[in-house]
Image (cartoon, rainbow, N blue to C red; front, side):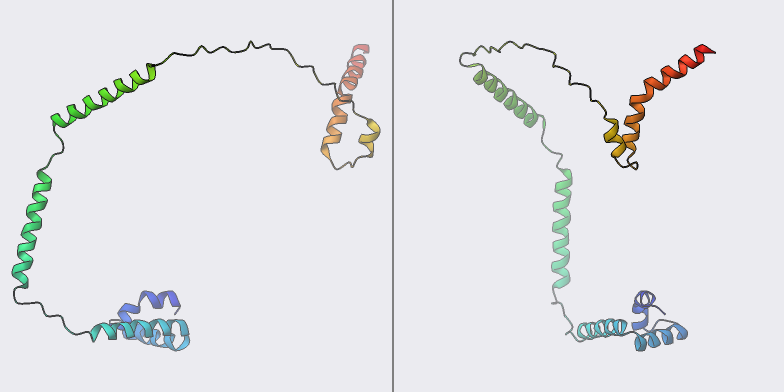
Length: 173
């Protein structure tokens, strides 16, 4: 038996509700596993404390007071359920207040002279193009061949020459 199955069946084990074979397997696991043995001891001690607590005896008028309190709670819940929220008067009063605040805010914003905004003219010009990079073949050849960027750059520069030489060969045929 493993620990997870032991913990799943532990409540039935403590209550002695398991079949005999499972009960024996649980006892055998307790002897083999220290962690589950500590768990079992902790649970059994807790149950022992709860079982030894003094019995609570309610007063003689407990049921009468409990029923009276339940009636109060039910009456309050019924009153809360009957309340349907604010009426039309509350809605119109709130809407009028919002409109008045909006009008006042707009009036405050309109007060005072408006400054003229003048922006400087914008002149657009095309930036100068950067010079085209020139690939130095000696530098490319001295670089490691494992970098695919250099071979792609070399092929890109030689592509027009190769296409031109192939088109001349095809035209000559």
